[in-house]
Length: 403
Image (cartoon, rainbow, N blue to C red):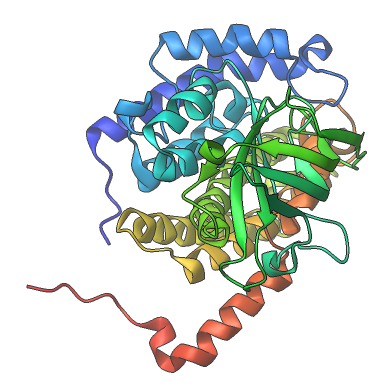
């Protein structure tokens, strides 16, 4: 593939980078910028979002007719890196999980009426959303076929929901929810996707689950359903299409995580490089020590490997493919590289890195979840092993242009 980008995309990347530099990065050093869960305070977020929107830096992942910039997956890979130079960046541009993935899947599969009701308020920043899939044991996690939450069809065509979900990102702040529940026993055709609003009765948040790292807005919640009624017009794509919808949503959403994580990894290198260039010990700058050079050089290489894997996956998605192998490889590489980047940067910064004088400790705690969310490393390695068993040497085939 051709790795050159258009002048228009480079201009967008530069404008995002400049906005992050001037409007977002300075907020990280002010304790008043943070809410109780170590994310950007919501009132402040709304004010910075208004500035980003006024500069035309809003929802670049969506098509123009939806209210976005139509950057495509490759363009997103370029720009998401730049926006996540700051820990606050993605939320400012309405490109943070889980809204990011929810908007993309609703844009792709919802009816016009459903888009108007459920998608547009998220696009406009009026509400937040959540994707309700993961269940505690023995329910579904990385394997949706194990799902136990059930949707019972009623005589009037509506559904009643009964079940239990947990680690639902953003649920405490969300108004719009995409729910995956069982409507049949078939392994692939037994799941259905529904929309519901937080004001509907028949469900509750049991608790906001405490985690070791900083949280997305709305945290990670445990949810119980006890008869939530969902009308037939709020079914997405029809009964039995839930597994297909998870596939449509999760692949691109996993990849956007990777794009953002690479931006944070580069930020870690930036902080480490700046400190190594000035800090001296025993008459030698840290930057001149071979051990430090080896750490930073290896980290730079791993970030670039991640970027190449992400870009290939983005290219495949833009061609209309699911890119399962490519997304799995990118997910493993980007998640582990982020964790390595935070660890190396803290090591080079010493006690300063371990303190709250930099964002490294924030990134380090956040980074550990990257190897778990949207499929653990081991799950994605299984995906790759199965692809290798089925494809043999074609696992590494080159796409061939057709006349």
